[in-house]
Image 1 (tube, each protein chain N blue to C red):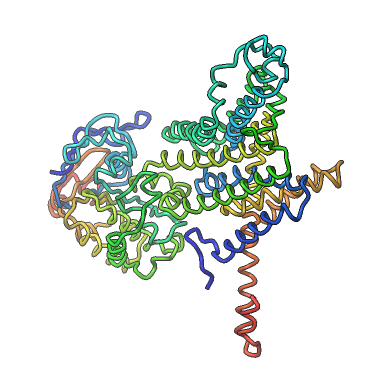
Image 2: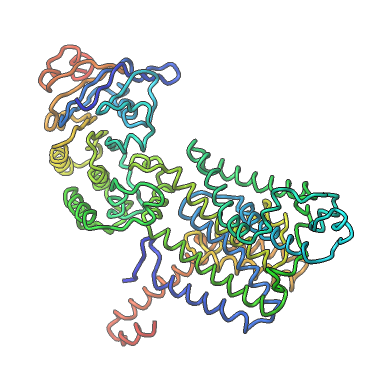
Length: 381
Length: 242
């Protein structure tokens, strides 16, 4: 009999998936050149919101179409810190900066902003920035979620609210160019605490930090799902009304899942900015938010580790198609999504699970056939 | 007296489903509520457990006003509700269904670090045996038979250990054999707590009821022992005789 965990997943398969992923990701810096390693790092940052969506959507039944907002929060908070550090060091626009008596970020100078806005100031501090990355998005998500879920706003309505918020955020960022860098985003920073983040060695370290954080995220997700809170999320997903009569307030549990997903998205965003040297409104709006849902769906929305594979697969396909078929790459990507939805409704993870079950059945059948050398067959597995 | 309902009224778009109803249930009492379809029986339970908000009137449970509470608060003060159609968590196992109903650590953080202790394991064991599901602990609730689901839901209530148990047609859709076992089960679990049962099956009511309340058009038509109400002329007219 196959050992299954509390969510009905095959333990052996999940362990194999995690191990293979670890081997794959840890070998990247040696197997690929620096450019490819940088691409892999970027892809992995987007796996964070996808893992969060497995918790939120797969197990909590709450489809957020606006995770870009939380990815963007983490990304912009990190960018603000890096930009202030860059502004303090460099002489970009120095004449103007000195004229105003402060070192403003370059885009503020270009937009005739004369004083650093008050809400930029705390981002001089690294500890404030890190705290903001891990506290603000989940807190915001919790309050937003709780307010809606308490009033029993859910399902499609909640999805639309999340979508609208992500759209609003990207519009506000673009509109407030003097404070946010506008459509160009915040870019052009090279150091983190004086360390050159563009050097190969540092990039490699950051890559490993990202891989480590991603595994920590997957394991944290597994802990949540294995706990009683995980069971209650499933119960809420399937029968929210009944959960109230078991004495639970579903609103807090749903808001918790939303906050957890926001936290992961934010961490992904912060790591993205640190490695890509960019925070951009194009990573906040509707399109990136929906893409995050696609990563989770392709990986299998009930598998945390599957979400990482899903993200990697979609990005690799994107890169491969756009490099080799520049004219039709978007169509090919579309075909890939359609193929996954049609032939693997539970994503890569579900597909792998089915394959394994079929293989096991095949082995058992072969093992029980009288003439077959049964023990050998089983070992061959 | 554990439950006192006074002047309870609810109207949906002008239709009075329950109309100025009064009801008193004693400690350890098993009360059956009967009446024709549309008499407002289920609506009455919905209001007691917080699912429906009354237009007027009061429901006091151990001196606390239930009409001002929301569902999970009503559950937490000790009222358990079983629905007409079996409602269990189908994607969870029997064990997990029972475990979730254990009335401890109902917050997010508490649940996150909740660990099964000996007390819980013993209780799940005892309840599972009582509801005839001890052999099916690791089966998904969704794959149980209709009757077993009804039992599981009763078991979930037993885990909650409510002081007032509200049961809506607990034997509906059961085979005669299951019916018998359920009657046994109910008389066992209603000991030491108050229970309100809605039921259509007269033979079943006769088997379990201490006292019977007959509802008709949102009002109490008659109240008393089964024999009393069966000989009440108004009752015969609207219900039993019909």
